[in-house]
Amino acid sequence: MEETLALEMRNVHKKFPGVYALDSARLEVRRGEVHALLGENGAGKSTLIKVLGGIYPPKEGEIYVEGERVEIADVRDAQRLGISIIHQELLLVPQMSVADNIFLGSAPGKYGYVDRRDQVRRAQAIIDDLGLPINAAGMVCTLSVAQQQLVEIIKAISFKAKIIVMDEPTSSLSSNEAEILFGIIRRLKEQGVAIIYISHRMEELFTITDRVTVMRDGKTIGTLVTGETTVDEAIRLMVGRELSDYYVRTDFPKGDVVLQVDRLGKEGVFSDISFELRKGEILGFAGLVGAGRTELMTAIFGVDPYDSGTIRMNGREVPIRSPGDAMRAGIALVPENRKEQGLVLKNTVGFNMTLTVLKEFIAWLRVNRRSERLIMDEYRSRFSIRTPSYQQIISNLSGGNQQKVVVSKWLATRPAVLILDEPTRGIDVGAKSEIYSIINELTLHDMAIIMVSSEMQEVMAMSDRICVMGDGRIKTILDKRDYSQERILAHAIGGIEQ
Image (tube, rainbow, N blue to C red; front, top):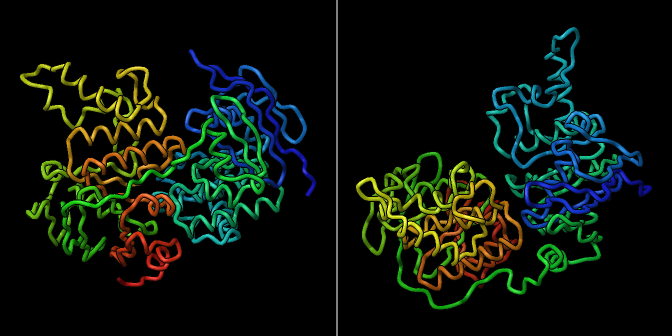
């Protein structure tokens, strides 16, 4: 295919109070190309895409679509030019049908009336053409998060976009669902659609993309041909330094058993779950979306109590019916979704860091500010949390720093067992490396850790053993010497029992 530029952004500047979010940023994307946009959180990727989508007006710069200079003043301008952005945070109306969402703002009909039968027919035709198991007449609220992600993609396809931006499109997809997405992307490529692909999952970028543009500190550092570079080179450009020890794991003898789970069950969710966890050990939990991993962890933490079985801490049975029971037993949980379950986004960094230990510095309606400050200073220093002050609203921090605050909040309770559910989801590679170092340091101080992760390389590199779950059961528990991606998937998909 002729290498015609579908998009060119030249010398784009965007300034917010006190900081340049974009500084002479540039991006060139060809027709029929999947182009990765890489950078740490705060590198300028999101700002550049918001300029392209008409959300932010640029301070300076030029934008060309298919060779013609254009002005993008708002979202409607972007849509008229054939630019569609699929945001990481889904923008669907849950109480409307799939068809209603797909054609929202462009519904077929006359004289102000929507022809709903035609709308459903047209939506279902697109869905069937893509081979997706989705009912166009069904309500969006009945769909899984993965199916909702696919509906967002169908929306972009429905108005024949020329340029589609996909921001973390596989963050909620299983391996099989991701393959469906990749198939859709390949079809769009064949039709000449330009795709800008943003993801922190380096392995998939090197599977699906043609070229990679790297950003750092609001600047475009360079553009690489994917097949002619390496993950290490891309990471070096992103962070401006070598990450020689990306996964940090110290091998040493493990201590006594601290947590015993015996035949734990919750009707219709998981059953017959048994495992042990030792001091200083990282026990990984792998499996496909829907395997029951998160549900098991919330049950152990008392959010959704189990129906049968026992939990023991240091050999003593501890009935857990609430998070308070779990905390008193010495168990803490860093949840899968930090924004919805781990943080109070409209409050400050300091408030979030100390939320779990308020009783330690509040007495007789008075706050001991010195004790509060000691706790905050300890974890800010220990984990290099980058924030201008403890009064900063936490939603203004990068994803990596938000995650460090969530971890700090629970470590302040001094737990014996720390459960980490998808601890590096949605954070950049530099922050991931820091999180891995924190996890490793905790085990050196005898903390026992359960780590749930959908990233195969992560769970294999960091875990001492891996529990593979499928259909609400533990299919096998693998020792480090027995790890392989193929073996883990075989147990997770094939239902091979231990």
